[in-house]
Length: 237
Image: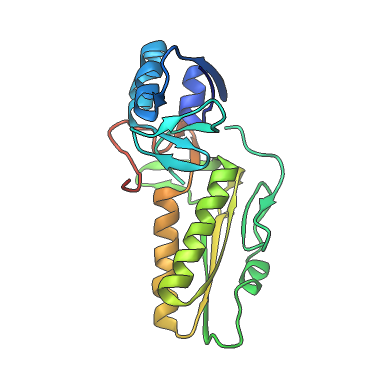
């Protein structure tokens, strides 16, 4: 069977392509077996393949998940949130977006305001210069856009179900300079304590499950963050 696999971040750089056409004589083919075959075919990328997850049709797939030729398959390295999408994409309701344009906090907050909510928050994540002794000059973000949007929507639904709160999230791709916003999360709720809790949950869930990667650009070079095979950052499956 023939499978086309999308690759991202440091894994795409090691293999030398963002898309890989792979042929397997095995059928059925599972997600776990696909990783084994890829590791054997691309030994230089085997350490990264080992700690990556397979996504099938925009959902993380356990090792026993069966892949068909019709499946949209992606290999997801440890997320840390390349080749960014060059245009803004958002969900039909406009509350969740991935864009290479500067983020607008006022517009995002307006999407969640409610006459029955007495509290609203706007979380803004920005590029900082110093991390310990390491000086960053900029960050570069890449996203698996269709899956990222689906995961942002999941976060929004969870926030609504758990706290009866409204949530909107926007994330940048491409080059993000110092002090510029890479992510914004707007939340509104009936009371401030609920609003703080829901906002904190949204950013932590985003960092753990949304397929967005960042490359640190600094004085000594460039490095994909989260690329350490010993430092996985995934949700439990």
